[in-house]
Length: 201
Image (tube, rainbow, N blue to C red):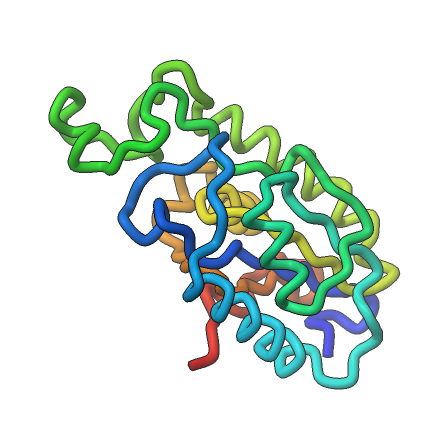
């Protein structure tokens, strides 16, 4: 059931585990394939999605990031994307691509993607503007039913933050594990997070 009788919900799915996500490396532009466990998690995400939606009609729109890890996750989860949306790519980490947070902090003490600059990459404000553009389009579709976005961890967390009116850095307080779902809805026109970081065993 939708959270509002006249509106569908927004379902966010993060791609399954990759070698880099398993080791904490920041993965933006680099196209890293899923691990075997990542593929298992992606298949399980399909079962989670079915349980969440019950006998609801099919989603009116399924959009996927251009990265292969997101596209493979969508396929293994049983989703058929309507389009690839370039705006769903992960945060561009610039010079910090492929590095872990401890590695970055050797030269940039206290660094987090939420609070510090990312040299050569995107700022939180730039990622937030990208999320806002996606959400504007999503809101125009929700009168027709549910919408699914298959993408990445940090960007999905920014989408959640912006959905409920927090600044992009508010995503720091929200989790999004590999192959997990988050569900965004509303109650009496007030945006809310119906589920966050949901993954069935």
